Length: 414
Image (cartoon, rainbow, N blue to C red):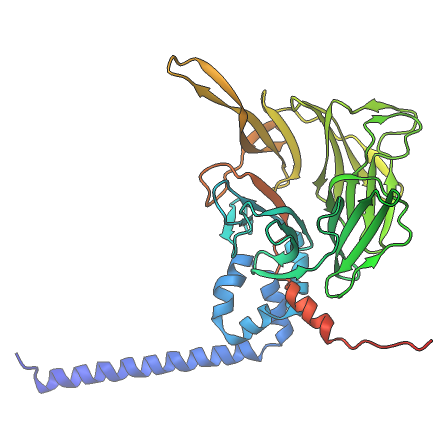
């Protein structure tokens, strides 16, 4: 039925009011945007630097051109770093999965995880270490060294003549100069035994060989803590005359230091023990356990300048399986890896232990109630075979290299 003249007039009036309301809302929205953009840019830098990584890499970058330009600014990555250091996370991967994941806690106790670009979780990569928001790894197939930010998928390749030579390495961040350094300790036997220490600063083209390095005798790979790298020393038996058990390297000053953990006048035999270093917040810990995973001693460095180590309360073992204490989980609980042989049963349901296969389980330990709880990792169905403490940042290694290349070099006349 056709509408009456009065009905059409009412419809036109309603449509006009709706259009005017829409125009007013659009106008007010534009005014709000203009007011927001009239704010000093420094305020946007400060606000965005306090937001979680998932928001910065998702909604924030697509909100407007201003926010995107701020987030991709190298200066913003330095501003965001202190916030990231207060809320570190963990990189992890799973067997049979070539992806690498990053988990952290932006609010409360809820774990938030993101799938990272690339395939760093695969078996072609080894020696993954983290420092200052960047990660260093070795590509087995290419026989190359890479420094990358796995969060944003940015990386640079390091050419090294020392890649396949016997020795150790380290990757660390110098907080005062804000420089990243890759260190290689090479053990040479010919023509006569000697130790060579070479350093490459990210952004520089050539390696530097340290002339005065005091011949650091170290083994295994280091841990990074508070501007320094720490290695285990070679001594298994400690007596009154033993000079050191740990060797540290200050990334800023590029100086080695030998550290004795046990007090003078004490001795220990670590020959039948599993020894390793772990990071506890702002300090490093020396951990010993027997081959069954039972803790014997944990020593933490409480005074770096005076080289004072103390023993915290004893940590209980979760079960009969081997347990390796790793460090601090994101909620400040202690975490570690439990390793147990895989138990198989034959047709007669007789219990059989396969000594060649092992099951890994990651646990957190609460010192207050002395209980171990399994860590639930998003994205993966089984327990991760690799977990690395990592600070999620927006630092771009390729931009560091590009900025260093643009800096003029001044020749000095002799």
